[in-house]
Length: 100
Image: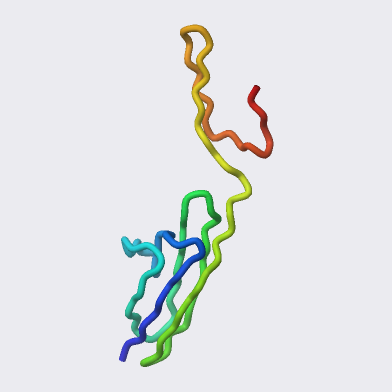
């Protein structure tokens, strides 16, 4: 017997990994699971990754609704032109640095 699991995130569009494997799907999506212990990992740009686990029983329906937390550090890449020399500044934390 198998069970159905619906995985939803707020906001939607997070990549879904099940048992360490990329499902090539994004939230919301529905999966069929064999009974037992399974892990999931959700990742989305500018959000903290979410890792969790679920113990699936026979012939049940599960609905996971996971709220993603915005990353505390926003990273970006900016090019500054000084004369004819281009400086590339990458991976700058907006919280810790200011560029004038």
